[in-house]
Amino acid sequence: MEKSGQELTPQEILMLSYLEKYAAGTEPARFWSQKYNVEDVPEMIASLEQRGYASGGKLTAKGREMIAENEYVLYIHQHNAQDITLDTMAKLVAANPGRSYRDIMWAEYNRLCGEYIRQGQLGLYRNVRYTMSQFLREEGRYKDALAMLSEVVYYDINWDSSPIMPKGIVRGIKELSKQCAMSENDMIDMLTDRLTGLPPMHDRCSVKETVCIIVAYATGHDDIATKLIPSGK
Image 1 (cartoon, rainbow, N blue to C red):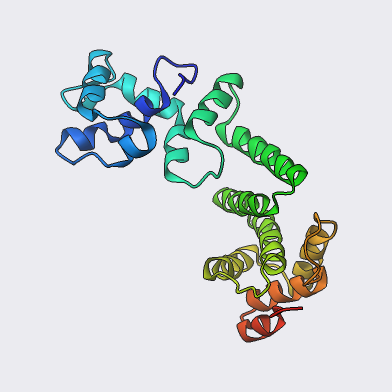
Image 2: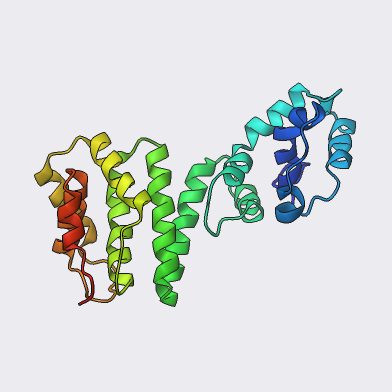
């Protein structure tokens, strides 16, 4: 991996987040070799200590500062960021000094969505939109998160010839609708505006039908929502 405008590579910065745990005797996880090509964890820790980022198995102020200045490293490692890898993000951060890593990620998500639409890869587009919904929810932007999630529902219903709503999506609808605290009519208007004009898919479930399904789940009428989901048009 390339250095992210710092003297450390992203995987070295990530190692700082785990250094004290490993120094205390915890066995290093397999993801170091499988995901980041780090075969010798003790050697990397020794190198970090030699450069003053840790001492005696404890982070120094320099090490803690490095973690704080590169929050994106641990975030990317802990979250499903779709096609934004740690290496990709390091390059983006280096190219955008002073910009919030979350703003950088959001711009990259939008770029990926545009690319997938142009390529006709609507399944990948759907996956990024789901991740963006989760991203918005983390920021407390519940209405925007629900609106984004409605796109995922629309594509899920129209993608499969016999769709079944994933439990995680249904749970997300219910939780976000409570956090939004919107009236049913306001929710219908918001979702209709959001879904109108989406890139087309199989015309199995209209915007109006999709909105009815989402609102039914949001209001606890799961049985109605299930009946509205097309079993095969």
